[in-house]
Image (tube, rainbow, N blue to C red; front, side, top):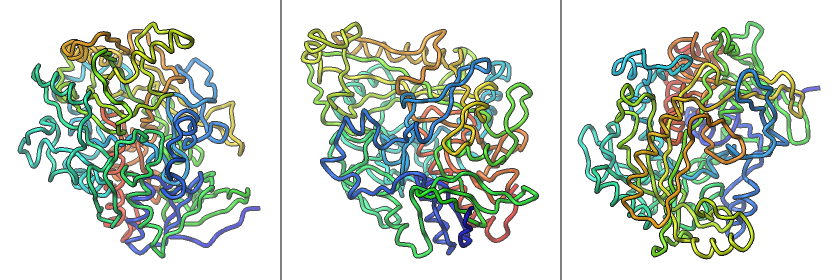
Length: 588
């Protein structure tokens, strides 16, 4: 028998970046806010204290900060004809667990998208004609422009304390920044991090052939910093434990270091960890939500009434909750009808490894978002018609860590165990670097999410099912990037050079880690027939439900998603404060 709790003004599902942002902003509006987090409570102290957190086996290999598939998973298939099977061992992507979510263990790369990416379909049609869009590709405009989002990018970068170098301030190109970026209203809050040897070598080689290197925008603090919420940060010490680890030094931006400690001081804010939301409850006419139902750690079922429901969980879980709660019509890939689950997309990556007998890269000196980037082959720099694909990539080099289990880069053909492996480790550890491509991924009519007809979770609910495979367009894009990267690499005169890019016929493989940049499934737009959310991230069908996160991306950008996710959260909550709260209604 469920217990009905005292009504709150707002209930937030998930307490990562977006949950923390929305919680802070709505508490400042004077609302009573409750956040429900499915995982454990986590804070810098004691959870990330040194030396406990610098345990590569526990966190880097055994994924202690990630969700456990036995508790939370989905099924995956490549085509509609296949039978989906459960994702039983983490590999391809690693959703974060607990308070702070993926914001605890991210690397810290924090970009803004190009203006063209937010209106991609219009950009393609206007410049290259609709005929170059392949059959089955379902790219869309986002419904919001870069100029509308710019103040909210600026806000997120100030709250997160991003270190970088602007390349375009109010239309004026700035030396040493990215000349191809959209205009910014001002400089980054902090100057860029110092560069490691490999990043400097790459910058020199790229510049020598006419490219435009700039420092990777980083959520690792380059100096002491206090953000608009009064949260303090210390400079990064390049310990090499960023990606998959919480930061013990208060240097990496996370919900804990940037928002949560300030939010917890608010008398009108409450959060409950180990609280699994089962569904969003809807009114009899299904036009509004009445709250959520969740389970406590002890298994008690609670009905939590609220006037406003914010879904701020990870992309996969937001889509799953919408499907379970029948918010928006479920997408059907055969008819093309429906919106919830539509346009799942991922990320297309590749890279070239370089080995140098005479150079010591000191890989133990690294930061999660250390590096040098070029955008000379980004989306607004490529003739899609001439090249035969839609998309783009940033190209980057830099040392992130020298962890002895995960960071044993060796030449291809080296034995994976035994005496030869040991000799190769002795010869090459610390003597290699890589140049990576981090590229876009387009959306397609047969790449989507729905409820699995066979498998259920521990509560008896259907698992989320993902249908996804690589497409020729995106493989052509990554092969194009290979052809740009290899000449740069060769010019650096390595003793050995190996490349790893997906080629024709490549099939999506869940086993190796790729990125935790899952997007789409509850996408934003201006037409309720083609999007689940309007331009303010408000459900078209249930107007007091707002859905934050990368699920809103109609296709994936070429950059890491966190900066865009943060800006969209500030954009959405500004609309809630200014337009929705005075008169609750559909905003479009």
